[in-house]
Length: 433
Image (cartoon, rainbow, N blue to C red; front, side, top):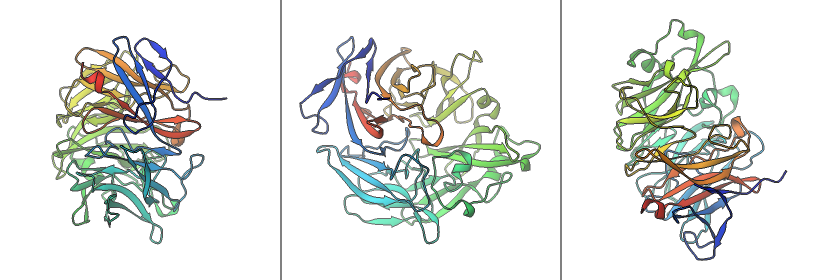
C-alpha cells in the first residue's frame, strides 16, 4: 500500500501543500500552510535516505545555526550487526549541501550514534566502537577541521558547556531497552544481577578524555531518597537507562529499572543528583510510574523535570506533568500528554511534542501530530502531521521533535518514500504573535 509522504495539519483540519519556490531556509522548495489566523508555518525536508536526528532533548542544529548534524543508518530492515558502520552527516543550512564527516560503528536504530553538539560548531560528539577490542568510546570531533579525539567513556548527553559527557552503560543498554546504545558481540556483555557496584553513570572530561564512574547502581539503590529498595533485589536485573544534564549543567537525571531475572514486567523510577553524584533523589517513584508514563526531560529552570504521567487516576490518557527534582511540587501542566515533550528553551510557556501512533491524540493510521502546547492558555496547535509507520519495538520511527538553540525552529524525524527523513518547521510567525 502506498503511504502518504507527509501531511500538514493545522487547527482547522487537513490542508494541501503550498510549494513556495522562494529560496528560504535551505534554498529549496518549502512546504507551508496557514491556519485560521494566517500564521504561516513553513516545513522543509532537510535530508532523506535512512537518516535521523538524535533525540528530543538535544538540538541537531549547531550553536551558530549554520549546520545540522545527523546520522545515516547503513540499513533500515534488520538489526545492527557488530562492526557495521553508519555515517555522521553535516548539512550546511544555507546551501542544503550534505557532507559525510565521519563513520561510526557505535550506534543503534533509535538514536543512532548519539550525534550532538558541544559548546560551539567546533565540537561534535558521537560514539564509536573499536572492533579489534570491542571497546565502545565517544569521539570529540571538529567537523570544520576533521580533527578528532578519542574519549575513554561513551556519550549519551554532553553537558551544556561541552566540557563533560554523561552516559549510562551503552553496551548493556539493550538489556534495559533496545535501540539506544551501541552494539558489540552479545557474548561479551553479561547481564547485571542485583544492584551492582560495577555499573552506573559515567562522566568523561572532554579536555583530558578521562572517564570516571560518577555513581553506581548500588549507590543509587542504597542512597536515593525516598528509598527504592526492595526485599529481594538479587532476583532482578538492574540497569540505568538514559542520563540527562539540566540546561544549567548543575544537575543530572537518570532512570533506573529492574526486571525479574525469571521474566516479567519491569519497575522504573526517575532519579536526580548533583553533578558530583550527591543528593540522590527519587523524583518519580516506581509506584507513580507504574500507573503509566514515559519520557522525562528537564524544564528550562533546571530545578524541575517534565514527563508524561498518569497523574489523575482517571485512565483517560497521560497528563504532561512537572515536578521538582526531589519529587515535590508535582502538577499537571497540560493534558493530554503524548510523545516526547520538551519546553521552549527560552522559558516561554510552550512545549513541543509528538505522539506514538497508538496514543489518543492520533488517528491510528500511523500518522502523528507535531503538537505545540501552550501551558498558559491550555491551547494547542498542530504544527504538522507526519507518517511514522505502525512498526513497534526496535524498528519503530519516532519523530523526536527538538527545538533549536534559539527556539525558532523545530526539527523532527519522519518516514517518507519508504525511508527515514528529517524535517524542519519554522515557527517564526507563530512565535511573533
